[in-house]
Image: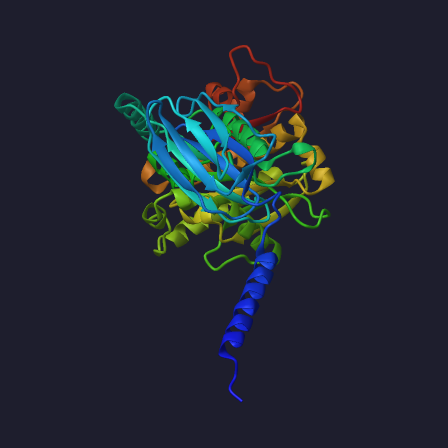
Length: 444
């Protein structure tokens, strides 16, 4: 009996249709969350403005540049926009405002511009911190005069003869770092602490502090390294706050680079987290520019030894008698430290995942104590280990505790230094008095 070919064909077609329907059902997204723009965020940096669209899922998108008036349109086919989202005023000279258009077959996010500008865009996959994102970096036009002033400022600092310390507040902008209870974010605390450290450093005669960021904005890896090089940094200190799945772990830690990887499990976890956050968004940077900062020459081992000594000096000054327990010096393969050709460390000031640490580091008194200790370690390191090409002779920094009845003249004579030297090192003005128990920095 011959088979009924027509019937078989019909049966195959029906089966294929049913299979396709089942597959579509399995992979379909809920209508309420499909390709939805959940949040729009922006940050203004000195050289660019970043816009981030937080998405409910991975999606395709396209951009268009329009004129009269100038604007950039991000269109998401078959997309939705959360009902709470509307017009956002920016007004930073790069973007006038951000607005949304809800169309029948798509949605649009429109960036209104005062003038045309170059921009880059890319999509980011979700991670433990963020959902799917669409990111746009719009270039801020810097005039030739502004650029010359920027170059001149960096050159003057580099040639000043002062010790130049690069202070790097961790994260910033779209990368908040660790987020703790009560809305406490690592990026904000890191900036606050970095400003305090910079102020403490500059209270010492012959020292200059340069920050890699002065506000809440994204700074790429290449830019952080370039700032350090342009300003002739003698050492680099990156300031962070830690987090851990275990809320019991607490304390401060000082890290320097390990080319072989972390030497303990927790250090490896910390390095992986910091590297992931730092590298998020670096798609906007030229990979060739980044690659040239990752060094593998034998000279790195000299930098590692200097970094170890810097870590020890900072550790000595923040351990013992400090409210935040010190957990020790550790090594790990941090991306930010790999790019440096100078003594460099990363300080994890406290664990925001621990209630005790979080309570302490929120206090201004504790912040100042930690900043003072970190700065003291940096200053002590540079005085005793000046760069080989600086022509500066190594000096010893001592601490003198004032006894009852002592005078500045007697203390200066005891150490063979001038009264002006002591006053300058301790930020004292004419007419300043010393008191019993006061600790004075003595450099000789």
